[in-house]
Image (cartoon, rainbow, N blue to C red; front, side, top):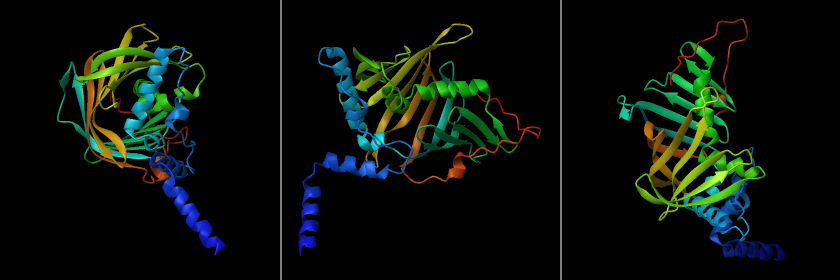
Length: 292
């Protein structure tokens, strides 16, 4: 009888928990076996002191943004799969009918992109290494193409949230109102102790991110380049608000656009998807195609 009463009491306690707390508990259990511990927005983005109202407002906007994206479910993704079509641009004009793609992502730094209808060209990113897999075999990715990918990854929204905020000395700056992706937005900047920064435009109505932008200088020419990624056509998928249109910009002009037709979260992905079998030294190596 005592065991039965303890069981009933446990059920009542769980039912009395707020929905957000139950969701947080579930997401922590779901990620318990992953490489990174589960986190919440309040843990990841603590609010700055009230003595700095601009920074505090920026922190509040970031927490609202994470909540709008799906809260703990968004922060604690284990895997993501996407299919869609990717379009390149030249001088602001689309360069063709697009390329089919299949993407497999295991946060934080395992990313596989299969291209073409035959899925016969694959870009694979493992940590800070990149590979291209074709019928010729596996080769290390062209250094310029790898640097371009790593630069974008290291300034992407998931990377900023999960990596920048774990480092000491991160500052928040409220930049005021503006327009991004044809929407009224509030702008905030996240600045590291090394003076690297991104600016996030957050929709004033939905609190969803609509653009993330950053600036970098070429180490050889010292030329400045402005890059950005814009998000549109959000849909709720498995409890996560997901943009189905993603556009990359370089110096104000579109450079790539992806239209996503399907997304699946948290399905187990085979380790073989993230394995690169590069020939031993002395063997015949495949050569990268040098795609941009």
